[in-house]
Image (cartoon, rainbow, N blue to C red; front, side, top):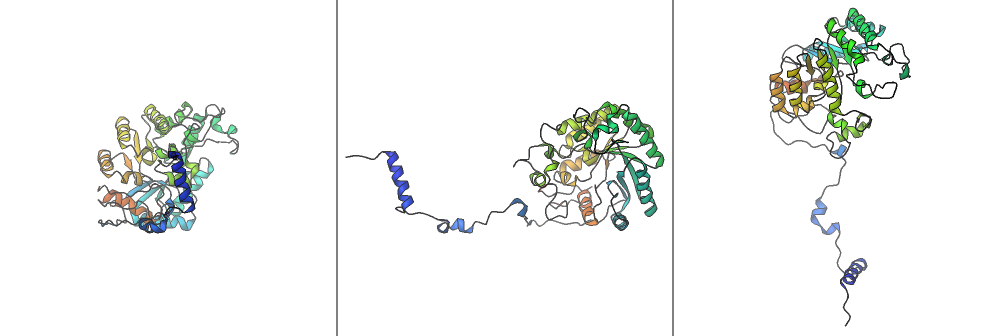
Length: 366
């Protein structure tokens, strides 16, 4: 008698299933499958917390404060009035505009702010890499010519004479501005040393945005904690061989701070390392001329409340308040709630889809 081989038995069973010789099962026969909700996309996920936590809605700072990081340049007169009204309501005495362009536009911006709202604004001038060059032709930019640092130092001196209170740097130094050979110009390039030295001599601070969140330098994969943000803004990614690493940028700026101990440096956005407060604390301990501000980093600080509170209590005279942009009054409230209450698990921004990470924050009770 011929016996079928195991392989033939498997094929026979498969054939029986295909022709209906054996019972088949569908989703309709599976009660669990019938109850399973439909799949949704990440940007559709809007969970409502069922946590019953205390809420202390703080609408103004406990003490008058200075907002060291704002951008009012493009505001209309009416919008500027709204900004100052929000400052009044939130107990913000003075705001720092970081929109001062070098040259004649600086005086125009400063005068407009002072004429409309005297004593409510100070202005920092920005580093000018272009000079008399063609904006569309980087090869003609002043930063490519010898002695750029001396000329920029002189422009800083003139801006201070006109009323500038400091110097502002964007992250384009280190991530965007390239030399004639196509290589990115490093933040610690010695051509800028005359500028840092002059700022110290003039006794005006340098506010420096050097990098972005660490996640922006990682691969945009399912493991990236800012994936949904980078999906919406792929141009914000600095991952790959075309850019320095996040730590390389941080280290380069730190070398500048060490070389110029007489110059005060305000490192924007918690020195671009709010994810590593231990490293930042060590930097502050080693460099007395280094300061930080919290603009647009409450989300990072508020998810580590124990560490953040210890950091703030350890360095109270080295941390400045800032917001970035010109937030409406409703977007200021989470700042005070984070800083002044012990509230738990609350949104860091009043958006239906948080802009900086899918998490909530906790107050640090200062």
